[in-house]
Image (tube, rainbow, N blue to C red; front, side, top):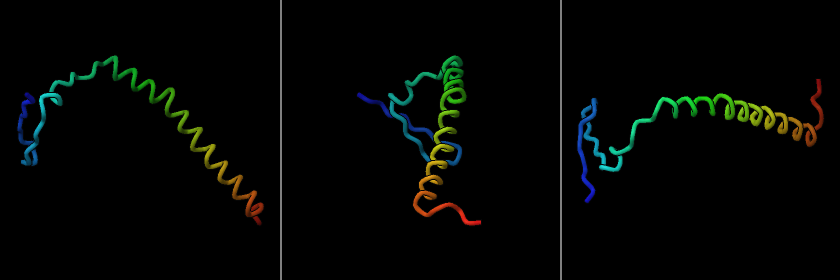
Length: 71
């Protein structure tokens, strides 16, 4: 049977959590470090290249269709 625990948060509203939600262990420091390193070493550079490359592609395609900028 799934037990339900009720508690009040600081704002006074009632929060209900099941036993499964309570059983989640706290993340370890090594897990947090690995997540941080993944975000900073892999995900941030990949996202930066994708954003700048996407913007460059949009400019390139718009100039192909509309012509070069007139100054």
